Image (tube, rainbow, N blue to C red):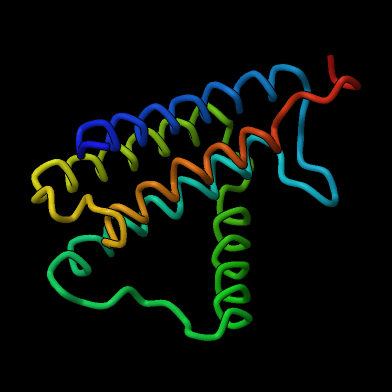
Length: 151
């Protein structure tokens, strides 16, 4: 896959997630005790994308990604960050959160487009992170599948 194809998949995945979240919200899907609703999912993705906008330039410049070697520690930190994102959105409407996500991913595209194609090879941080976002968007779209009880 070329750099341009991967970046297009990245943008398409976010736009599909935004559209899916909107449809789910219109169908009445909201946060439940055991799962996030559309607002929380969009806020979560926006928060991580904003963090990526800060992290990517340093990582591309040679800094190792800040990750825990221990999977349990990484999970606890990820959960804490996700909880912060979801708490900080307050009562902001989905449209506002979607605009924030769109702004964040478009900023990421601005950071990635000038990078050398070498960063877009399997095993490289930029490639793996970008591909991971596409897959994570798909996971969240599946979570937002509108249950029959909402139709």
